[in-house]
Image (cartoon, rainbow, N blue to C red; front, top):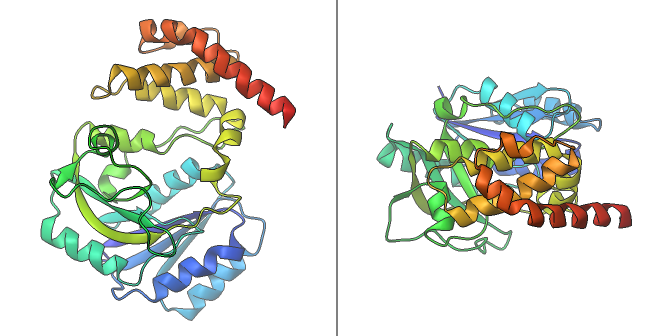
Length: 294
């Protein structure tokens, strides 16, 4: 059995998916499966992938589903995979040719059942690390502490133990396509730390139609998903009050968007949410006005 599943959620990305494919073909280690979750594409993604499968250069598994958004694609990926480890490489990203080899060798050397996986580096095409590198003085950290305690910035690449990511699937809300992926990652932080590997294993390109550059639109279009996400973040036992207060502000704003007048009674942090109401109202008005102007 292969050690690693590289999974790629994709939606109408046939025009850029080849770069990801070619990077996987060039891998110095073939100890992986490429799992493509086609989230309802209407372009030629299916034909393209079938062509690659016939080439038989790497092991490819393909799953087509109705469009559910990124989190729905992640749900399908975790359900389908059965390797020990998994990593998400987006359709507009690609891997250095030794990335799989680095992941597998690092895990064989340091991996164990007491950690949830590996945190590694993302970089731009010129190999410049996105944000900061990982702290050299520690070998393990939760994802949350990495950002909010150790001051790390920028996107990082997460390699998880598959048996852990199968639990707690993301909720699917009718007519919405987004729930924050960190919901699952922070749940794992409650029980496990992650190993730190200061190696670039993914090159990132932020395309104009990518979710990273369209977060404001995501906010407006997916208020139920955002309200759920912010409410869950308020429950984190290791988060500071200031962090939870920011989540409460967003929770209020998203709740107003869906006219959920029970948001205060449903909040896991009622006092913080009550104090956040004026700021949440202002944020709601700002987003509403921005939507009308757009």
